[in-house]
Every structure is written in C-alpha cells, then in structure tokens.
Amino acid sequence: MKFMVIVKADANSEAGVMPSEQLFTEMGKFNESLVKAGVLLAGEGLHPSAKGARIRYDGAQRTVIDGPFAETKELVAGFWLIQVKSKEEAIEWLKRAPFDGGAEIEIRQVFSPEDFGPALTPELKANEERLRAQVAAQQQQAAG
Image 1 (tube, rainbow, N blue to C red):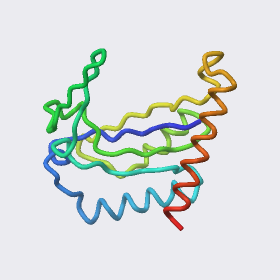
Image 2 (image 1 turned 180 degrees about the horizontal axis):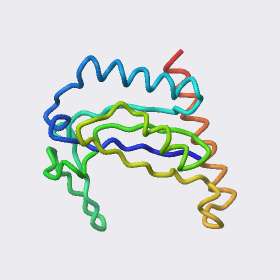
Image 3 (image 1 turned 60 degrees about the vertical axis):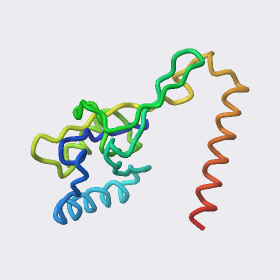
C-alpha cells in the first residue's frame, strides 16, 4: 500500500524560514531509516505558497491565482511517499518523525489500479502502465 504523507505548512514555512541544522540532521536520520527499511519512495519539501499558483477550472475557463494563499493550515509544506503494508504501519513510521511545536501531518492512501474497478478498463490500465514505465525510464536517464 502506498501512502502520501502530507506535511502541513505553518507560519515559518510560509515565510520561507528554513529548518535548523538540528532538524535537518534529525530529518536526515529519519529519512535514512525509511530508506534502509525499503519504505521511502519519495520525499521533498516545498517552497512557500507565495512562489506558487492555483488554477481554478470552471467549464472551459481557467483562472490562475498567484500565491501566497491565506489559510496556512490548509497548505502543504512537504511530503513523503511511502510504501508499507497498512495504514497502521504508516502511522507507526510517522510517529517517529522529528517534528515538534504543534506540527501536523496527514496520511492518505494512494489509489492502486485495483481500487478503480471496472472503470479502469484493460486498455486504460495498459496505457497507465506504459506511462509509468516511460516516466521511470526518463528518471533513470536523468539520473544517469
């Protein structure tokens, strides 16, 4: 099971305040434990919403809204993508994250192809698999 772990923004992350050296060190150790256990698929921090944009869709109309966005508690400051056996295992891993001071994360399961039932036809599933393989090949090429 894949889970996206969403790190909620706060006033400091929205102001562009970088974490302390101590937090970077602790987070590096935590991430290393995720890697060693074969759990971590991806993880990154995000720039403040002032550097972002939102797109609102209404029929054929597209409206671009530049950041910053007002409601900090609804914003994302970073994420992990992990693969574990259950939501309970994801929770146990993230209890170990070196956060403090009222930080909040959200854990959400990522859909797997089986979750979509008959709406994901064999043709659509094959196309998704082809695209995933293409993305993986591009990432390998960029890394190599």
